[in-house]
Length: 171
Ligand SMILES: [Zn+2]
Image (tube, helix red, strand yellow):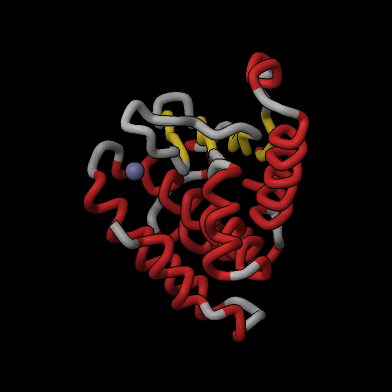
């Protein structure tokens, strides 16, 4: 089962560079992500998706919820990574500064749902990479499709999935 392969992973050398405020923000962020990715309803959805895509359980060895963000050379932060050979998936957070701006723009109550939805979309995306490897276009198209399917089945109908869809997939 996928939820049993999930763990929170921390790279300790990053601690040194960050302030206490940053560290506590990222630890809280990781715990929100970890909990929401392990929710039974989402796990059930993932099982259905993996079956439908013929992605076998043995293709995933572990899913790491990374505590600190991964910054690409162009300054953007990375949502996730997939090493299909090892079956290793990593999910990264948004930066504190980004969440602060989000809070200013959309209000505090939108930050948590954004964090959860982004992580879910990232996990769907990286799981699809196990099968479609470097076909980024295909993976993006399917991520969108599956995320929409999941959003429609979410218990909380008033969570306003459309806002998050726009926020998550604007490119
Ligand atoms: Zn990708």
